[in-house]
View 1: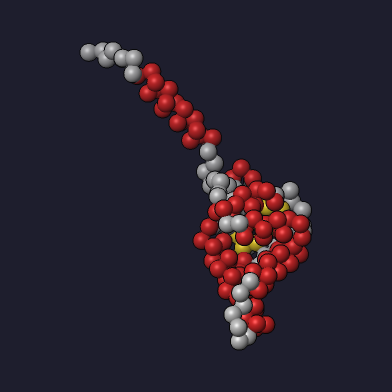
View 2: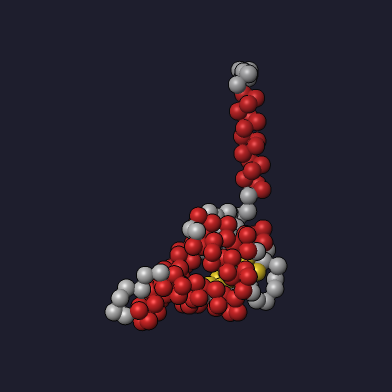
Length: 155
């Protein structure tokens, strides 16, 4: 017996075709559109490592600020220490102490060697605002990465 379609079949088929096309254009791994490998050195850093590096940097900044403000609490001096720990090493070496400990680093998408102070400062300010740092795309880049033209990679 031959199945006769109804007027409902066309939109359903159109929806399935659109979904199939979207899945075909979606990259298979983070960083594929940028030409990065799927795994290993040079691949996009996973979110867990990035979060771990951030937590290490926060604790380190609090400890450094506490050394200078003892016996009082560091207060906003922790933010100043965190900004210095974030901007200076990323500008010249591409990694904060937390990133170095977890073997990830910041690289420019355009292939330049150094991130530079302006891009590092922009990343720091946007990370402080939190929202740009937690909004991700499929390539593993958050808003602060995209706005500064950088990506975090595995070492």
